[in-house]
Length: 239
Image 1 (cartoon, rainbow, N blue to C red):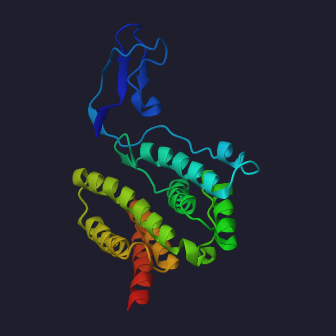
Image 2 (cartoon, rainbow, N blue to C red; image 1 turned 180 degrees about the vertical axis):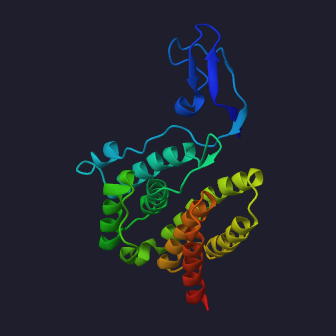
Image 3 (tube, rainbow, N blue to C red; image 1 turned 120 degrees about the vertical axis):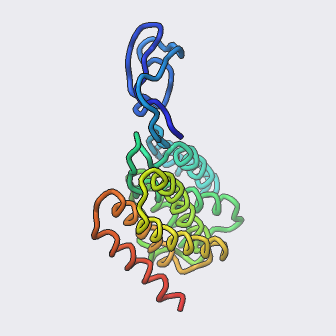
């Protein structure tokens, strides 16, 4: 959506950046009577920090299913707020965002399981331990039990990013980037059509391709070749 980033309180005169607070309420006096004082600019992000400490503190007290459910909900709250256009500028698909989406899907899956295998439990706790810092277990460690939620998570992260990429390209035309984005979209739709049941390595490659698409759009020309190489790896696997 387009917002006015600079606001002024009509009660006390304070000026602040909406981009930093995500609120029309005055940070000084709390009044909601404020007006925008600049041009409308595309902005989809909101201030948010992923902190999984409260969930980790429950490890010794609650079951894995309960912890998984709590982790999924906390990640859901975080990803709901985050976007990738900040004051008109396209931002990268961060590792923390991807980790949050993965933990959301993995946690939701495990919270519904009657029995959780040891490999799945170990993987979940490793992911929980580092997701807020953008640390995820290596894709080679994804257990078979989590293959589907992992694939769906990577597709969901790419989908969220591409929505903002399309919005950005609507205002900043780039036919080459648009074509590359279309190839990424086709692979994402394939994962969704298969309900996430794809090689985790391919799902991970798609995330890298989407991230490099963003890097290309924002000025790193070599990122285009890297994105194509990630997609070529997926296509080689599906031949």
